Image 1 (cartoon, rainbow, N blue to C red):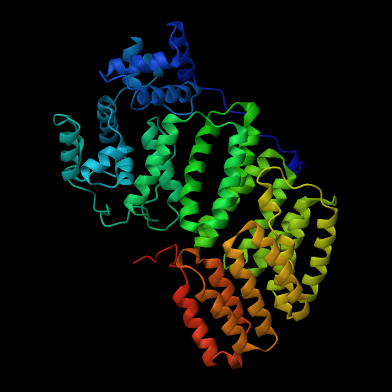
Image 2 (image 1 turned 45 degrees about the vertical axis):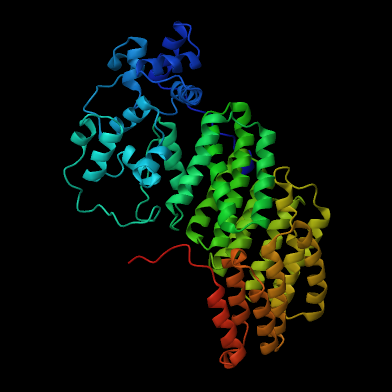
Length: 531
């Protein structure tokens, strides 16, 4: 039975017949893709703006690869090539939908979604979904779009007379209720970018229209003006996002990360086979960071899905070190209220089964996470024994995975020592581990761990019977945190300190005061309860 390390990257599917025919017709006329883009703009009587030529050139590449079907452009492509549309694409033209005609009028006039949203005073994400026929346009909006796009009643006639009873007009810009699965991406670059951005940001938290519009504008600028990045640039992007994760507020780190994840996904769609494996390694690294930041934000459901995405991408490359590194960090962050303690242990055990017997950094990281998981369930003797085994593996380990190496060498053994000894109440070893952990995390500047280290010291105090003193230590940590650096991981670690207090002491004033402070400083939940 093949192992995960034997898996090979999937081979891209051959283009469908219509895509092959499209390329052949273009080349038979001696047109490059840029010239074809100009011909299309001429067909719709649109100005030959450079940004539009670049955008259409990129779309043509995707159409000719069969990545997307040119739903909104098929009639104009057939007209530019002077070929019957049905013959060229093998489709029968039916009455176009509201979204299709909306995009045609936008394309003809060179109007972008962000500008249209600004002129209408409407959410850009909602416009993207209307253009994709995911949600119907309210009649008043349809009339305004018709007038603004100069459709002479064409759009207004296609709009429904009234909205279906299931339509919700009171939802926030991004919410669980609004997330709709898309079976196939269409060809319009800006609409696709908006929908992809909604999917990536749609983690359950409401996103303000201003924030979404700004992020979409940045993504569109990147999509329509930047050439695909080379592999070195993507490796550098991974390091940049790791730095942002450690030094910036989680919400900001997530927004920047999502933009690159969407951009990377688009590049993978059309990547050459020679680059595909390395781009999948980049995807695995960025998805790991995204799952990490979602855990900090407390969006555990979305984080679990992104851990899965990271593992799937790593497994597709056959890079065992990357596979093990991702599994170790998934288990490490699952301890913070994301999964049950028994599930965390299962994650580490499953990872050890694919690690093999050869010493490596990936195997050491997995065993290190196993020690922390054992400590969480109160198996302190087993945790210490496993910690010693991980120390031997770290000593024998080779170089880290060459993508985002600072993540895999980020102080895991030092922090694991602190976690294991603090939970066991081993004061002498905690004192030594505190100094080692501070030295490491001062170097990598991760503000999260600066707080977690001090909370582990408070935990050790409580385990050894110093309830009031431990509560004061923990309260000092929370009081010193800027609001932008508060995290669900810090809140959950504070809850761990409270759970260590003996039951008969949990009504002491110091404990009650700390619990009130913990509730006061906890960031708002990422998921809003349904009403």
